Image (tube, rainbow, N blue to C red):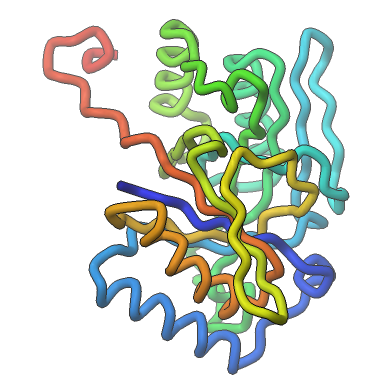
Length: 253
């Protein structure tokens, strides 16, 4: 089973702090152990919200709020990672996602690259960067209601024929299947879902493949301590979509 551990930001990270050598080494050791256990599937950090924007799509014109922004409904339902030239380009694509979903709120923030935290320079030939387009949870997603088939197909086409370079997508299962880890002076405290709407912005994540929520929680206890966050959520991920068989309409699109 695949689980995502998403840790919450701090005032220091939101202010643009650069991790020191000790933190980089501790995170590196954790990642090495996850890889050594054969369970790491992905992991990224996010830049401060001051470098991103929030877009709300409804029956009116899309409403865009430039960062920094305070936490509101920060319970995630899923995300895409894309590569684009600018934040505006990423926002335009996120707006198209919002139209497909209907009423939707999405956050767009740059993914942290090694050069952002002083680990080497940015390659001169790279003129774009990665962005996370985070979809917020709704009553429907929390109830486990699947997106209508026609909307699923529209979203698939949008990803396949994106104006940006679409890299990956993930969908979380309802938070009632997850667990929240709080880092306290007395140790890690766990609370089973469902979760109320978290007010804390997401700072980064890892995706691991382990047999159970209990296994994922044990890794979360170490993870939340290493990254120095007060809170992290463990959420189960939907299985990745199966490839379209040759000859199907989706395959021919």
